[in-house]
Length: 110
Image (cartoon, rainbow, N blue to C red; front, side, top):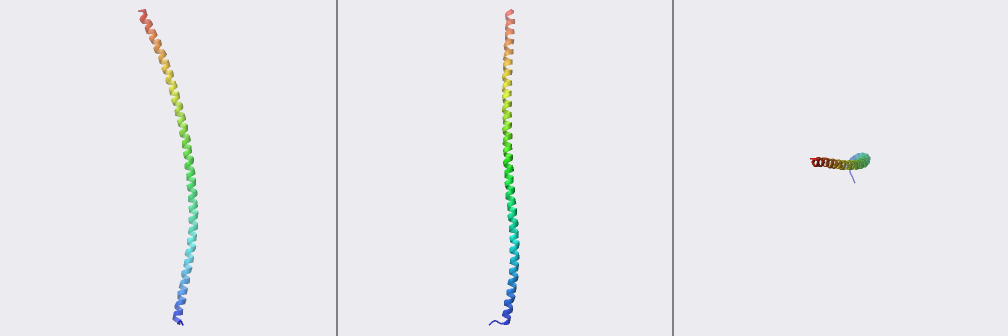
């Protein structure tokens, strides 16, 4: 049979374990609250990343469209330059032929 001293120690140990159990319950509650906040933050982060990816994709599309527009403008400019070069060459050839004809005519008169 247990003595009074042993019973007191057992009751004290039981009281201590009850206090420890209360502390553990409080810690568990705080951990659950932190886990809930973590889930909310994780969801916000995922949503933010998805939004950033969508913005990046849209910006990439806009850059590609702008690049295509610049390429088209560059091709048009090249075409205009080629046309002007052909016109210049044609006028230059005509003037050279006219000059040579006049020069030959003057030479023939002498």
